[in-house]
Length: 334
Ligand SMILES: Nc1ncnc2c1ncn2[C@@H]1O[C@H](COP(=O)(O)OP(=O)(O)O)[C@@H](O)[C@H]1O
Ligand SMILES: [Mg+2]
Image 1 (tube, helix red, strand yellow):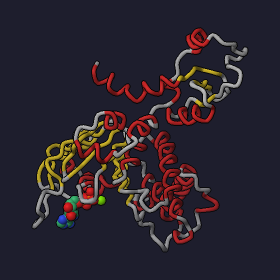
Image 2 (tube, rainbow, N blue to C red):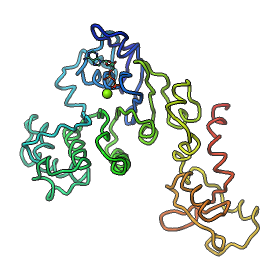
Image 3 (cartoon, protein in one colour):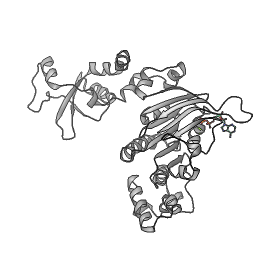
Image 4 (cartoon, rainbow, N blue to C red):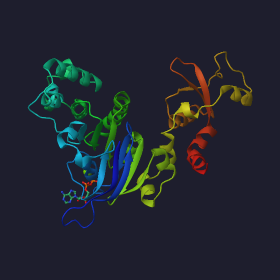
């Protein structure tokens, strides 16, 4: 989808290249996170995609086409762009902000109105309640929601997001990250997200490019980055509690195994529904970390995994949790 080929950017008078011979391939529909400390070249890399910055050397391809050959305006219409400040137009209503690009494109008023309502619904803002508000009446999360709706208005292929959650307090940030992941499942856009927060990268990314001094040190899935950091700097960035972070990426549905085996091992009385007396249950979507917390709460070395209609689908034992943290090693050896 987006391909960087030996792309560098240097600024006149700069000591080192802001982006240094970067090659990267971003798949269609994935969330690719660029993470690294301030000044490592994340924003520069991102802005070269929508031609806000021109590379000093190298080439960027979009669907196989060199972006230099593409019309800048058309390119930008196909790329939604969200920055930390969001940058809503203060004198315009929420609805007018979201309608910016459709208006520019000359859509008919009815089509614009329908699109604005659809988008506000998507970002969970009631159009009747919020459509007429001005940006100053919104909190940081609501502004971000409007920013996302505005960026999606003309149905772009790609969304570039530069520290989008940076203005939110920690609680709102986690909630918006989760909500954005839910939105992403509905819209299937290719996302390039910039952050300096490794936990955000791990939470949001299908793949993460860890950057330093304009270079990519490692480009891999969160799980692989956590289990096999390719560089001391990557290890340092991940910080401690690596095992817990890894457990956060694994769902109970992935971990559970068959109850019948377990039945034999434990040789205790199951109720008709398949649960042991007093045994606790957890949802399939819960993480390995949630399962660990639940085992600590109950003091049991196992728990049952149930689906949305409370049917037991499997069992997780404490050993499975230990294995889940070392699984990355096994995968690597094969
Ligand atoms: N317009 C500019 N002129 C000179 N140097 C710049 C300019 N923009 C960015 N830089 C430098 O390029 C490097 C990368 O910047 P940037 O991409 O903004 O980093 P990040 O987004 O990772 O914080 C930094 O060292 C920064 O000082
Ligand atoms: Mg930046």
